[in-house]
Amino acid sequence: MAVTIATGSLVLGGAVVTTSGGNIYVFYGDNTSVKVLKSTDGGSSFSLINTLTDNDITGGDNLIGWIDAAIDSDNIIHIAVVAQIGAATRFLAYNTLNTADDTLSSWEEAAGGDKTPTYRGVSISLDSNKKPHILFVYAEANMGTTYNRIYYTNKVSGSWATPVMVSVDTTKNHNHPRITVKASDYLETVYTDDGYVYICRTKTSSWLSEVDYTTAASSPGVRSITVTTGGTVYRYGVGLNNPYYLEENDGILSADTLFSDYPCYGAGFIGTTRCVFWVDYSDEDIRVFKNSGTGWFAALLETGSFSKIITEWAYNFEYQGERINYIFDNGVTLYFNYYSLAQPAKSLVSKPQSRKTYLRM
Image (cartoon, rainbow, N blue to C red; front, side, top):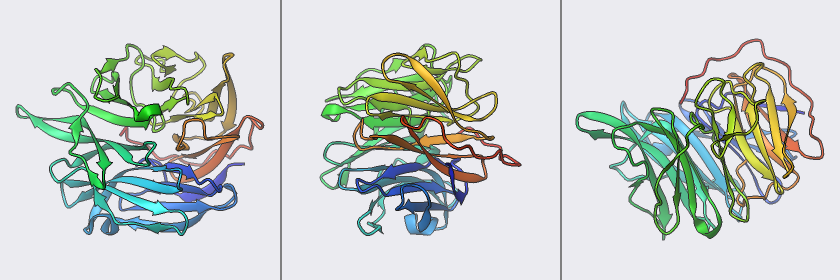
């Protein structure tokens, strides 16, 4: 049954991760703080264990712009936050949370002083050495105009590397960066340009050429890339034209999938079964599509007027085991639930009386 865990929303992103011992952590935020919730009973109940205020993160009165988190095999959670200091200066903040005693380390500036991120998203992933890799958006001037560009940074030998521009076109805006790390510590990324073209780029020993999808387009979800242990990559996006179908690797996954708003879907594995979650366009219920190799099958998970869903981040690609944890919201209330192949149907939460209007981020 879905559990109400907080008053709040996922308008600024968020994350759900699980330790090897089964403790579940949820991150979400409002304009001035990042909230950290913890469950020690498999998700039946959550308690607030930390509120990371704007002053904690940057030492000044500022705003929170975006949140993401990932967990490594030592049960250390890596946190990336976009924070704003004063009227314009923004800060790409990074920290770790040791789940053994729920203590934070010190906040670090991950992007360097000359690359201050915008509010258009941040995405973090971890390699086999438990090192963080981050994509973010930086607004850069070019011939009298400012364009949003996708930048990448990572931590090497205790220091953050100089950010490298990943998006190629210097006269378009790029947003919605998403990153994951696959076998051999290769990087897989997706992002969009201002024409809502869905762009993929891979890094092996160097960055390969961009690949533009022809039909999949707008707004990749927070967990929009999955990779098998064998290295097969699945990227999910929303179709370019109305009706806006879910697409897998630039092809329509199913004519039964429609979307209501961004970011309203996520993906993950249960063993080798790939699962894609979405908010249905017609009724704003949450459904899942699953594929174990013989085609796609749908199940209704939650009924209500929902806006966003974020699936669990796992430190290896098929770690999920028997279930995928996820968080979702209706604009005013944040919920937790999980999906299991053994129990495809779950108790459903009631439709709320009102729904907050979201901005596309």
